[in-house]
Image 1 (cartoon, helix red, strand yellow):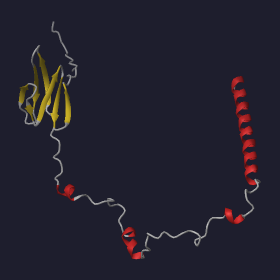
Image 2: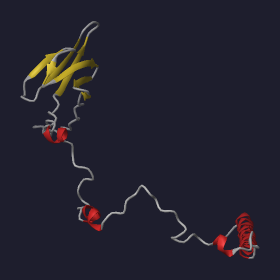
Image 3: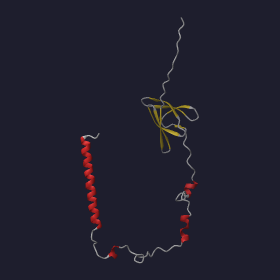
Image 4: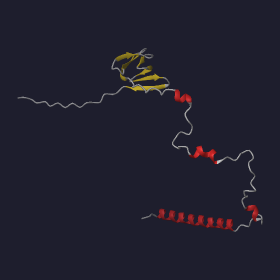
Length: 172
């Protein structure tokens, strides 16, 4: 059931559509029956091929000149890779990040407790290197690592609470 305000808005919308259609019909009639600006019909016709001037700089080419275009495999790259790109080796795959085990923050020193990819546990400070990553900052619960231009943030993993259920039996 449409409320009173919904009914009036529907009527308003219908009036708007009728007004737009009537206005469109008037514009269409004006465009169709408009008198031509000049009585010369030839001036409204597009130019013929003889009337269009030829471009003198562009030589006519034989069909064989276009053969590479229609024989081209469209799934290939548009431009072949440059010789420098072909000769360069692909970048090495990124090394796995070390695991942050903890951070120790004192007033004037910071330490990070890390396990490297070989499984060795180390205590390091800012500026030290681990698995090719340089330690740039140590904060409470996190470490920033640099490798080239890339920056990585290691977060301390919070232990998941383990629910332990013990059954206690009493003996009389």
